[in-house]
Amino acid sequence: MADVERCAADTLADGDLDGRDTPLVIARGAESWPAVGRWTVDHLCELLGPIEIAFKSSTSNAHPDFRQQGLGRMFARGRAPLREFLRSITEGDEAERARRLFTGDERYLLRRRAGQTSIDPELAPLSRELETPRLVPEARLHTVWAWLSGRGVRTWLHYDNNGCHNLNAQIMGSKRCTLYPPQDLSKLHPFLLGAGNPAYNCCRVDVERPQPELAADLAAASPWHAELGQGDLLFIPAWWLHTFFHTGELNANVNFWWKPERPTWNVVAARQALVDAAASLDASDAGVSSLLGALDAAALRRTEP
Image (cartoon, rainbow, N blue to C red; front, side):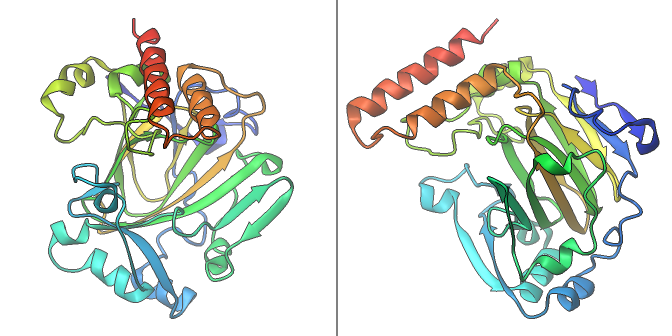
């Protein structure tokens, strides 16, 4: 177990994060942004108006809800006016509040591909109260997401499959962060190719309620821990696995993803290359599906010490 290093923003030069391969908390690195401390329920509703949003809908506090049977229940979503959604995650029973989560899966703030930038017009007012951190190379910015949640939400253990570094800004609220280095991948049991669950960047192990057959492997992994408060930034290097437990009454985060100057190569990157290659194959064919699963399992075994 290790604590993630904390530092002040003025100790870092532009480009320092690009060559870094371990997580880092930049204490109060975003505290000067207009959004920080300002994104209350009333302010967000005033800023965005009467828009309707989609959101993740869970029968527990886990998102996605891999405690359930069937993909429909695991990846369930709902729709509601923004004000109704925000009230539902900030008022009433805590267990109920944790069953909804809004992320960039539903609507991104910004997306840049092949030199073209797309911005969600209804969410654009959020961007005007944010800043792209100087530590993020503007030319290699890939995606910007916003997250909104209540107390008790658990984001399932996963790695970001875009190969990007990630700078996570805590705009409102707080959360506990647990991260695992890429070499722990086999101990965390990602969903295998061809096994029926398409969330290949997510892990089968439930970090809150470890399954008996997976508990020993989880205990043998090497977690890194951090606490994020309002205005803090968390740097997550490309391919690190992570899970968050949201502890504020209203939690708002913004993620800035950018492509590393030189692609990072490790066991998670190699495994994702297999996943990407498999996407061009017909996984509905039983033989292909079985072969892909065998290749994935063999690749993970090769990463074990």
